[in-house]
Length: 140
Image (cartoon, rainbow, N blue to C red; front, top):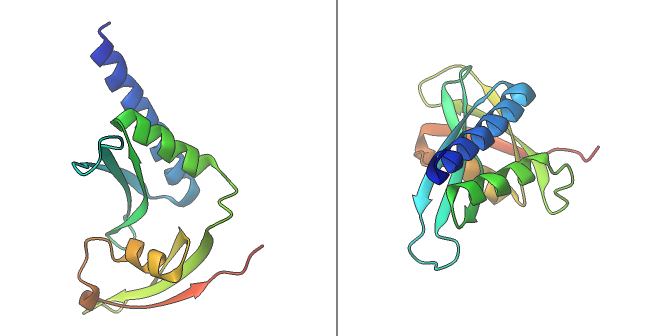
């Protein structure tokens, strides 16, 4: 087996693990959006983990990590997902409706602030297309 094949297999296995965790947790699919970060000599890859919910037909940003390779990013993402104690982060609920539609949905976000939660919700979207409210969930 070649080294590049081993790395591709490792990448696919990490993506599969992440997909399974998020799908088992809340029924969403996971999508891996890689970008080259040309402004850094050290963390040259940015990974945006997007989730897609078939119930409301929307995607949202789950989390972003930076690393030296796709495998480095995926390893960091998996560690983030598996860590149960993200003490600097809070849980938020965004209740939202898309313009022109009648259905109201609730989406849940882990973020350091309301602004970050809203940014994850509106990732690559036109904010004018959505009406929403946000609330901090109680700590259990």
